[in-house]
Image (tube, rainbow, N blue to C red; front, side, top):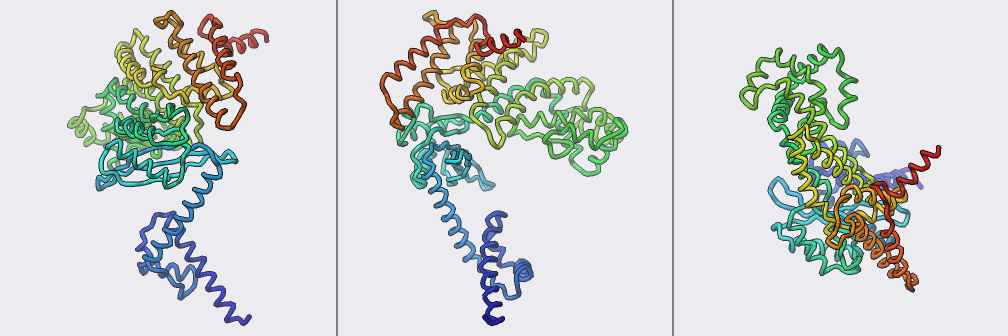
Length: 479
């Protein structure tokens, strides 16, 4: 081939590669289609490839982006069909700057290689918060993606979601136990709602810290002055501060009203600079005037109260952080909720801390309204914990015995055994449902399962230590 022909072929290949790279860049960086019409962008593309590089129009770019979306959608749809696993959904309602509400539908499933996939499969506008409208939008999305095997749907705590789930229960096919375990309410939303009550522990002191942080963050000069005050009081700033800030992105963190647990980050960071704030007050006269006009100057006893709130919030912050990790497994939920339950129980018994005790009792009542009634809980959370080979029945037994130690049913049965019976019944129901779908032998397996359950519950455990705990203690003592 002549040199000129080779050059034309190379330019053609480069044109195609450049066009594909441009489409990918616009999608990944969320650039507007009109970026290709800007002169600076055209110069960049010609410098990047070759003079005369043909930049497509924004209409062509829009069409090609839609084509890429359709291809990726077809690939994902094929993967879901090939995997043939049940899919879990998450529903979120987002509000735009123009106050338009959108329903975001995410799908979570495991492929044949045991890799977890999290994909947004639906994003559509909503005209209202009507539950049936939400349900119809989810139904339309599932039909579009040809998804039939839905295991659970996780939502917020709004009542409209309850109506949406009720609608979907009547419309879904290939349901597990007639969609009895379909609805899961977001635990993080519940924890954040619960923590709002905790912020009433010392609201005035927390408000003063928040205003002090807001004032310092108001200008770079104030930030530098506080850093200087920190160095003068502690003799160091850099590494000392970084070690303490955990996941905060700046050395002073301002909380968000929408995320109550973020107040922990704010108080934790501010507490480190308690002495620096005292010196800052002396060096910046405007600071004291500003604080007096708003919520009052920070006093020494405010820091003591703030420390108590920080320690209180740490429990909830740690729990939400643990269950917000990228690769979360369902067996963790019960452990985290059980930990919160134990802390509320202990705080409620603090006779020497009346304010904390009263607040904990109020929070515990709210906690039990959502979580304490096992009959109304989604049993899959308990089933997932049992399927954890490290836990099996040990943790649930330990948890129920501690919570319902002195309670009995109207029939005189120990309450913790009654709760265990419900969990085990659900476990066997799920097992039998799956066994029937894969064509396993039925026989008298169901009866044998029930006999095992009755035998297990008939055993007296003595104290509130599980058999698992007893075995561990025995090994320790024998050593």
